[in-house]
Length: 246
Image 1 (cartoon, rainbow, N blue to C red):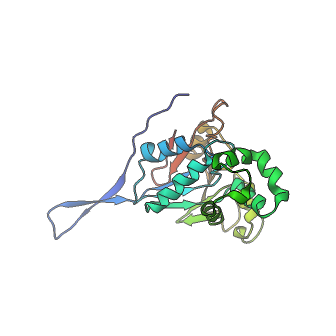
Image 2: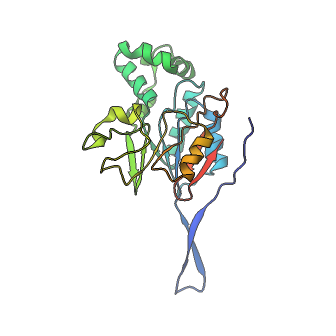
């Protein structure tokens, strides 16, 4: 599958300082979101390091589903942890796959469901035969994931929100399992909602952006490379409205 090269871009404003005979160019902080990764380590690294050229002044929101199905879940999580250690501004949200892992960790009754949804690949990646063997560093990572993130009028979530209750932030189940194409709840109606969870083609994702839709799905099915139109990992930059894919 062909990879389209995109040059990393920076954005800023020029400010004239009356005390200095020069123009000062102030870099604007970029705001990125990346959809479902599912153990696709190399596309994630290429996307972050080469496609968008992440800087420490940027903010990056990861929408969950770092694990399962793909064969490099551990490498993905290690990479995210390392970026945070290097003081990159990374916000990590929880997806339904991390939630399934945590459920299985707490109660074996949930283990078969997780295994059937890609948990076996994750166990192999971490080199374990039981979740009880999972290093506490990773348990802390999974337990520390957020359900949503709001900045300005951009609202980030793995899946979606319950549009029918007065406070949609009270319903964590919907945030990781259920999505909608439009919201009418007064709390949500003026927000641009960026989510993943259900894979769409890159073409469909770009159409959401071009049509200025309130809800934009950026899960372009990285782990489904064998399915026509999918197999891409995408990052969306909010201010330029540019989509980067690898």
